[in-house]
Length: 70
Image (tube, rainbow, N blue to C red):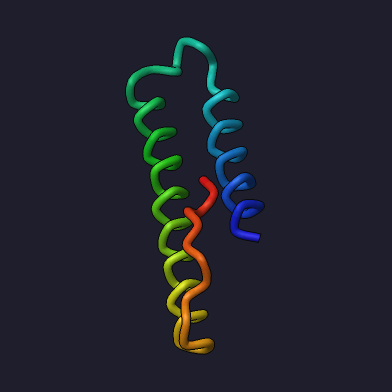
């Protein structure tokens, strides 16, 4: 579910960038795209960590650690 949400958010950000005329794909537009990508990554890690904390508090033993998909 987390990966699907991330993919959808990233697709939107990239589509917004691609819809800009080529002449407007300047440093500011790239910075906005990068900020959107980093925000999705940060949100993914936060949600993954929250899920890990919930599993630990419910089961007592954390599951094997895997990094979140980004």
